[in-house]
Amino acid sequence: QVELAESGGGSVEAGGSLKLSCTYSSRFYSRLCLGWFRQAPGKEREGVGIIDRDGITKYERSVKDRFIISQDNAKKILFLQMNNLKSEDTAMYYCAAAANWRGGFCPLWPAEYNDWGQGTQVTVSS
Image 1 (cartoon, one colour):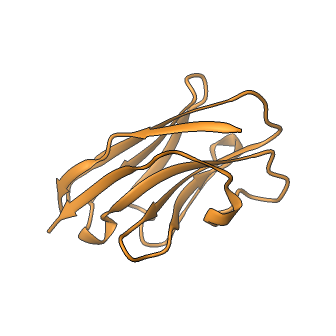
Image 2 (cartoon, one colour):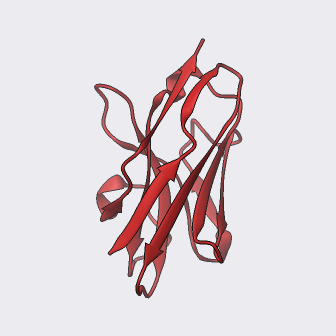
């Protein structure tokens, strides 16, 4: 089991930036997939981006070139730098982990992730 906790959400005007953090801890895992997800009111939870081993990242199309995922392995912190924010980015943002992933590249599907943080709200005003 992986424990996760997000921070850094808030309110920002369109065009602004926010940086989310997610601290995580786990006792043991063979391969750990970490990702950021979001859920807007009335919508399904969707993948924002993931980071795989060797720091390889993959993003949902609408945030590509605006959001950047990074990781501090030593401190076990996952980051999401969000730039040029738009009103449609307004959502509750979650970090999640899939420990002992046995597939290929880490997935962007929420259903594949077993452990979740409590979420942090991001509100973008236009």
